[in-house]
Image (cartoon, rainbow, N blue to C red):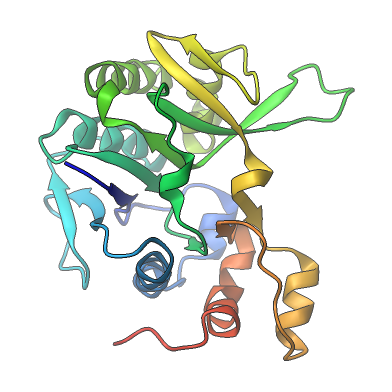
Length: 254
């Protein structure tokens, strides 16, 4: 197969973390429609699907449905990745995306001939002993690494289930990647956990929506988007539709 596929894991599960509880009424279907439309405009006619459970209700966009067992978000997120990577659906290079993002550039360019897994990472302040932190809202899965990727994410899921309760409630899906891929080295493709992993500087790919951009949006002027992906973390999800209108300039079809 040629080209890439885009996937976005989503399944309605009980909110555990504080900001998820505060966003209990957030319209996730609307967010995913916007994500899909931004992908179509920026990446061309590539396949894009929501990854979800077989019991999930109807969705107004293409889906890949798998039997999953975990019902806590962090664990389910890892399990959903396992199901896709182990399936025949994983037939080409794939970009995994969180649902609270918009795409403004072609993501195919981030795949390199040697890598099997592409992970975004950012350098922490010099006083932080951890050095780097993974941002896993955008992940690049190369089809050439199918077998090792599937094994890696199964190992990540198994490790996540052993973490402290508060980490399982929030952050487990990132913590396990950091532990299994340590040490992180931005700008290099290295061997980690049986994979060839490319650590990509997160700010080269992704930008968390800034106060300046929100000011530009409210002022009615042009909003400057300089990265391939804009991310609406936490309460900034509430600005996602207005930001979409201000930058892409049309409503998502009903």
